[in-house]
Image: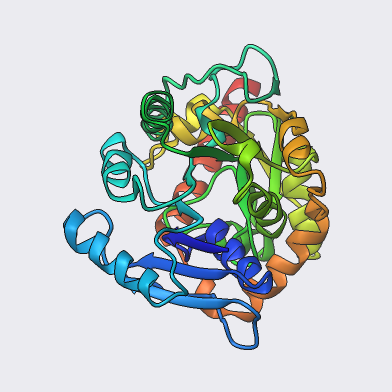
Amino acid sequence: MKVLLIGGTGIISTAISRLALDMGWELFLLNRGNRNNAVDSRDKPGKLTEIRCDIRADSEDSIRAKLTAALSQTQGAARFDAVADFIAFTRENVEKDYRIFNGLCNQYIFVSSASAYQKPPSSHAVNEGTPLANPYWEYSRNKIACEEYLMSQYRENRFPITIVRPSHTYDERSVPLGVHGNNGSWQVIRRILDGKPVIIHGDGTSLWTLTHAGDFAQGFAGLVGNVQAIGEAVHITSDESLTWNQIYGIIAKALDRPLKAVHISSEFLAQCSPLDYTGSLIGDKANSVVFDNSKIKRMVPYFCAKTRFDQGIRDTLKYILLHPEYQQEDSDFDAWCDLVIKITDLALQEIKG
């Protein structure tokens, strides 16, 4: 199996890359080479080929030449079995991909987002037939536009597309949270370790689904080369749904610290934050969602998300605490949390008189 991943260093794509090499695939990673690659091909049955170029900035002719050259090093292959793009965010991105990969792959996998599903949801139960509409988040609307373009190419030109919609996916480098700063999750972890209160959006009772990247990779691998997946959209998530109160409580327990939660309206947070929480909260995490995974299980009968969040997050926190490079301080976010919590306390005191 000859598979090209565009990107290949993110949370999801790294897990897929590792699994692909374990499965003995010929894996090609196309990226700029600017990020540390967590993929190690040593002592793996698969073969790794890295292609250095900028898929967004370089010319289509130069990219196609590099791809053709990489394929020529394999045993007579004229095309990739599958190409997956993890860094396509706009219609222009996938239009360029279509021009490059049409005729160069047997399957093109577009990594979309479950945030594209209807917001606010008409039902907490979500399947692939749920309408795509998110007026709150441009990121999601762009993903929808990408899907619509690719489906038109499938219908009109038989371009062999598969659309995959991940939800909130994490690995050993990332702690999934509802509210955090520009530098990621560490500052919230630091606050819990220091015994400081942390902000949970809303009343913390909305349901959310968290999927370990290793589990996601298993489902994704089952779609590669799968004829049933051509022309289809499918999400890959865990079957475990937790409230945000449970999620933060599990994180605090794994850190062996008490959780000091402060619940603040999502609308208030979206309006008062220097960051743009409108999309990530109002258009995503503030809504209860439970995914129906029957489609991925039908297409990939062996797929099962086996990593419970309380198990996976223990490994994540252990890894982060052992690796200082993932402990990025965020003093601005920390000060903002203190200010918001202080103002909330003052308002409560004022009301109580």
